[in-house]
Amino acid sequence: MRRHPLQSGAIASAGYDPALSVLELEFTTGEVYRYYAVPPSVHRALVSAGSAGRYFREHIRDVYPSEHRR
Image (cartoon, rainbow, N blue to C red; front, top):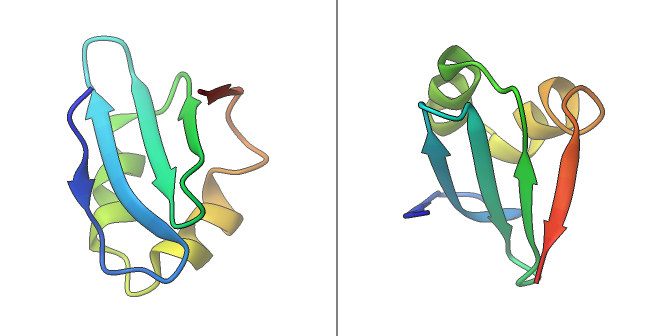
């Protein structure tokens, strides 16, 4: 999945597959996670948020099922 850089201290890049509703995040630690059943509106809000890290913590992290990617 193609990811795009974010201006964030926590999230290095984000990608989204609208056909599968999958959000892929690369953190500044180098870890990559995929979040499933994520609506397009959540992806749009994340990339336009004043603080992507805060938006992630409040609206994504404990809301959507995830998988750690290697």
